[in-house]
Length: 390
Image 1: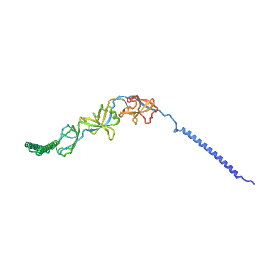
Image 2: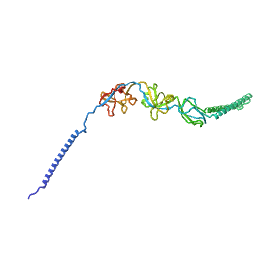
Image 3: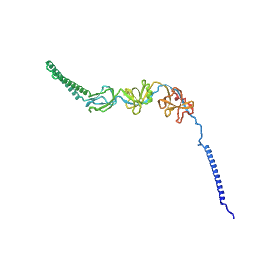
Image 4: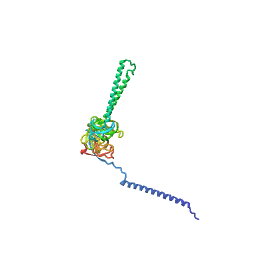
């Protein structure tokens, strides 16, 4: 009888299965490796592959500039303001009996010119009453002094009262009081005539003939006709520029209509403006209301401060300025960012000085890019056009 060896067959089959598994795993690994290699080779040949390429050279247009001695104006904006704006009020009560001829806003009057006259009958009567009291006080004082003389001649009075000393003192005081009352009455009479306290222009009015005016009631507003103020605020850089030439400045005011007139510095404010934190200069314009084009208050005007020539000033197109207020300079064929002091700007041009070595000749990049880097190699093309001169 034969016997089947199951254990041997099972062992043999297990060994064969393990061998086939190893072979399949090896084949799968080799296939995966080949796929990765093929993918990498294909990706390297694709347009989007990471390839280290040389940085392209930027082409720039430059302007050669050299600083020279130039007179550069400092420009600012100003606001015109009335000089000595004054609200004229009545100091006494009364009815208006007369006004200055053709009184209206804008009219000019000399100092002392009659503007308004009030009814003065009662105030004239008060003056005469005060004069009568003064005369009566003088008479009483004379009578008391005469009594004093008699008492001294008799020589019997031993006290101050008996010598009429107290009587004389009281009479003298009464005379002084009556004289002060007369002076006050005369002042009230004079106050019925309201005159211009200085050469003035009428700004606003609120009075008419026949109107009853109470003491303290405003009548009109006046301002000086001989001068007008212009308030100018200057940044720290502009103030520093003007500081060294403060006594030699030529100042010009240009109104919205393009009319210009000279001005002079009235004072420099010792404090910064509370809102803008800038220095305030108050200018003065003489005779602003004269001529066919008067300079009026509350106007915005242009102000030009002409200073003596400054050294190492460069004029260049406004396009050379970067967003942060610097310029790009080409040295050799490399870019360098340099700091400058801007003196003044116009829409198409600017005047400035280099902070370091301002006397050197430099090549400015006319059209700087935001992507430029310091030390970057560039291809230079010089611009010899008329705007490139310094």
